[in-house]
Amino acid sequence: MGKQPVKLKAVVYALSPFQQKIMTGLWKDLPEKIHHKVSENWISTILLLAPVIGTYSYAQHYMEKEKLEHRF
Image (cartoon, rainbow, N blue to C red; front, side, top):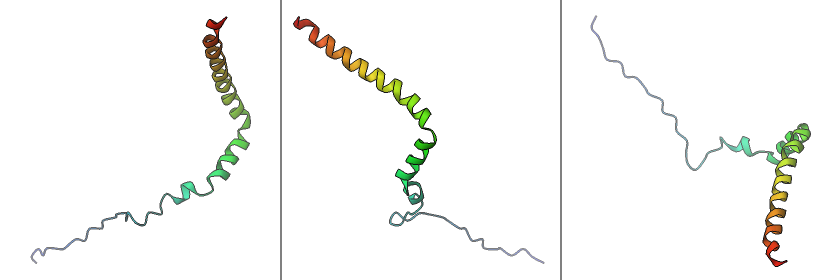
């Protein structure tokens, strides 16, 4: 009983650059998914966006007031 070499087959997985349908499920129904997330967490959305919008509007108002201050 001698040793006989056995050929092994290697499987190589690759994605074709012309046919990549892996990421399509991520972008499918994106507006509906965003609406669902916001409608579930609307209070958290308001609590996040209110300070951000308030701070931005205050900064814009302050900069405009400072810009017009030298005229008077």
